[in-house]
Image (cartoon, rainbow, N blue to C red; front, side, top):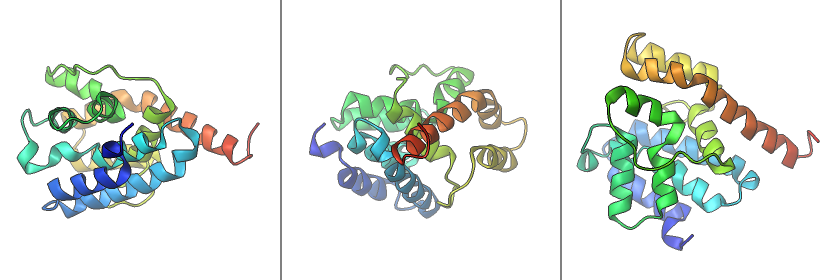
Length: 183
């Protein structure tokens, strides 16, 4: 992984493109903090931190192409030469593939099954829109309250819930193991 994909580069890029969206930046700050808590349980902590900072970059007004932020962000990152693995993590974050399918939008990156992927999903789904720590269940309830029960985002997140909860549980088990709390 090159220094270009490191956390500082990713933070600068996210802040630049999301400067007009302070609530989104607050969420990213919280997700990056959570990712930092999980950095010791992944093989590539720099990738995890970069993905945490960049997972929502597709909300940047200048980057919107399809209107589906995971894909818009991944396409932008590919255009500027970011690592394909980082692009894939952004494109598929928090089970975005489900919403993409519902929208009829193909995602060309495979959804990797890795500790980095799980930790990114955990960090995203345990961080509120304002950057505070929450539980996955509370975050899913917040999404439904924000969008409404019949919105495509709510329906997609509800379908993704088992995968999101499983990724969070695997990450929390890895963290406990590293901390010596579980064998």
